[in-house]
Image (cartoon, rainbow, N blue to C red; front, side):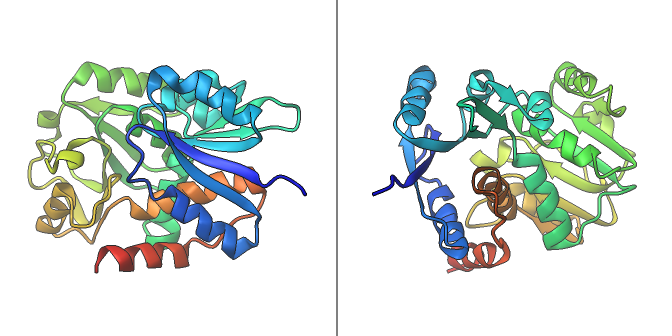
Length: 277
């Protein structure tokens, strides 16, 4: 009897993760024989836990907070988007035994914006709030859609300048503090800060959103986040959170592991229906 291919998500905390449910639905839909579980893994246990997982028949891993930078360091080889993000959320065992690291967050965001919500990025002015790991992971896929401009705003301007500089060989990125945004407007505002996790809002001024502009919070919750509520007050054309991004980045990881792309729409619809109950 052949062994079932094993996959898992590592993180701390991890109990809340929707990834097992999402990948179970993907596997059923595509008739893939596999199992996907969760493992509570602290940062100091990471390297040992990953080594044991792959030694015991594991085929691929997802890594969430606070393990993405450690996964980047662990990988034997990395995709370009992972290299620039300096963070990895997907590890995949290769035929030669090496571990490939990828970051599927940014492409998951772009697919959700463009395919699921019809928000075109080409020639648009994009504002990214925050200069942490979440921002770093989405910049290259956004760049590849040829926006007119990208601006990073952060409480600590030096951090925004450093992040912008890391991508300057690809495209000039504007960097500033929140107070410097006054007088400017943007077609798309992306909240990549952790503020929504504590139901808080970055220090945003009214008038930042261009007419018919859209807002997207990379975080998601069962009720509107503070940023989504702010976007509605600004009369955003679309006020979205990151549930679709979660499913789309998972689909990209699934494709990397299994070589088949699952349909994401029915999974997103199911999760949306459940959280509105």
